[in-house]
Every structure is written in structure tokens, then in C-alpha cells.
Length: 398
Image (tube, rainbow, N blue to C red; front, side, top):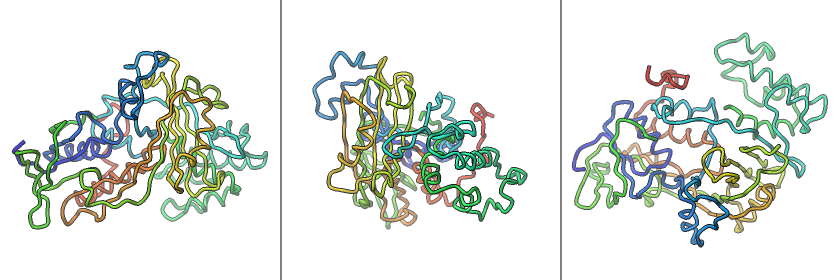
């Protein structure tokens, strides 16, 4: 460990792993360390199932849960948007050669005390119970416009002649297609979710205590573990490694729920997500529900794992997610956590310590990606160039 590196990354959460890969691919000499014996940090996957029960101080699971090693439960599961920035970053780092992607079977939105499938194409728009007949036709035209749209092809903007990809706001698009407020609400909350780390180049060390981040003249110069010190020019880390350099800005409540059935009114979907817009439950934050199952190798045969999450607004966090929990039906076991949300107190450019933000309540990784890109920009002095990313899986070796 007594070597010199360009960068030391502390923690193996998703953000830190992506940053480590981006830095390694760009030619940096990276040392990646974690004080835990396992990868993942706050967003780790827990297996076997008894380890999850132990983590929450519960007795071992019953035999009804099946083979415990068939379970692999994420503490903070999130969906990838297939055309989102995170997928492009994963392609860039080359990690996609080790991954298999599966589409979720449906996105739903909560409205008027029931859930309805968010239409993903013009056919579904015309049969949706979310809208009246005339609104369905307007929404169909909107969907055709968004599906045909290409940034670099003005002929795809013809349905909206005044459209300008740089200056036209999304609200102006909604107005052009004359969509009503309820349609705009569920579109903004759920439709975007339909878009659809063995990272090379670095040195990894698990179960390595981090005793000190060594500073000289106000800048980081290394990381000490016991009697060893690794020198470096920069440190990238999650908030738990530098509690004196972050501030608490909120909390997230999450409930991991183990069930032996799919969610009602989703056509027995084996994977789904539901957005409960804040206006539907008189809140200022949305409630997110996600469901995966044994078909995703996260549970024993016939079992499902659901997560309900939201940003805490009161002194009774678990009560705040009741609208989401009530949609699930019978729950065999529930694990509830309330986690602080931390943000760095400065941008890190002066001391060269770049700190990620805590994971938010959303059910997708796009906000996570925005934080990664911000850290990369602050640490390297340049924006990540997405035009250099191969856009097809399998192209990363070319």
C-alpha cells in the first residue's frame, strides 16, 4: 500500500465504483479501498437471507423463504433508464460485458386511490383509464412526437414547428399539445422512467480500515491505514468517510418488503414500479414503489422483493410511506430504515477531497448519475464527453 497514486477512492458504493472506473479508463492510477469486508457500502446487496435478518436484529428466516442463498437483496435498489446517462457510463467503463439487463414489465402511477399503467405508446394511450377520450388523442400525438424526436434531425420536430431543442421548455411542449394538468402530472413523474463493478485499471482493497486522510497545506496528500500510508493527489469518497466535511440536509425512509405474491392490479407483473405523485397524497415529495422477483435472481422461487421510499417530511417517517405499503398487499417481512441525506460542505476543489451525496428516495439512478458527473467535472476540470461513448452494448471493446 505504501505507493503513490493519482487518486484514492474510499467506499465501494455505486457512485464510487463508477468514478473509479471513469478515472481508471482515463489513465489515472487508482487505489480503491473499503473498510468493509464486502462491496457496495450503503447500497450493498445482502446474501444469504439470514444476513439481512441479522442486520436488522431479527431471528433467522423461516424455511418458507426457501434456500437463503437464493436471496440477494439490495439495500437501495434502483432502476436503470435504458437510454439514461448511467447506462452510457457503464458502457464507457466496460463493465457492461459482465452485466445482463432486463426490462421491467410496467410503470404505474397512483391517481384517485388506484394505480393505472402509464401508457408507453399510442395504442396504450388510447386504452388508458387515466384520461378521457379527447385527452387520449392529444396524448397520443404527444407520444408520437416524443418517440420520433431526434436531437440532430429537425424533420422529427415537425409536429411542433416552433420547437427549439435548446430553448423550448418541457412546459411549452405540454402547452403545444394542450395536455391537461393531470396528464402533465403523471407524465412528468412516470413516463420518463420508460426510457429505458468489476471495473478495470485500479487496485482494490477490502476490509481496510481508514484511519486518517492525510493533509498538508490544506490539500490531501494521502490516506493512512494502520502503519501504512498511500500517497495521492486526490481522494474521492462517500460521506461516511468524512463526517466533518458534510452536512445533513434531510432524511429518506425506506421499507424493504418480502412478499410471496405480485402487486394487485399490475396483471401479475414480475417487476414493476409505481409512482405516487405528491399531490395525490397531500405531500411535497413523491412516494416510490419498486418490485422485483425471483426471475431477477434476487429471491427464492415464488418470492418478491418490494421497496417503498420517500423523503421524510414529518416525525413519523414510516407513516409517510403507508400509501405505498398499502398497495403491496400482505407483507411477510418488512425492514424499515431511516437514513440521513448528506451533502458536502464545499466542492472539494481547494482541498482535492471530492465527496458524493447520499442516495435519495427516487426509484431510478439518474440523480445518482448527475452527482457522479458533477464529481468528475470538479475532480478533472472537464465535463465528461458522452459523444466518446459507444452507444451499443458490446461495442466497448472496439
